[in-house]
Image (tube, rainbow, N blue to C red; front, side):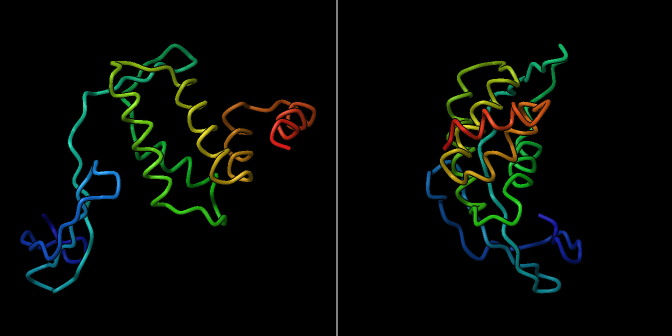
Length: 146
């Protein structure tokens, strides 16, 4: 694996641990050239899940894209990235039995996950996902959690 600091091709594994939910391996690596240490995660490749979007198009599921959207909603909140990743892995396990999934189902699952983690992040994500048209729609959604 290339060093993320200097780009040297050889790194050695210093430490390996199974993640909490057992779905990935966390490895600490050290560059043999510059000594820089960094972390990588190894995860088994699952069947390629296809996402059917609202506009009729289909695209491959992209975990990083979904994780970025979730973390934007969690911006400046005390939400653990580790916890988000664990919850996301749990959802992916449920989805893995399918070959394709509707974007709406992914969105609803994320909304429910965030409802349990942080109410502000939940409202932020829901406001984009559900495309609130006006303040009344926003109020109705807010009343549901209050």
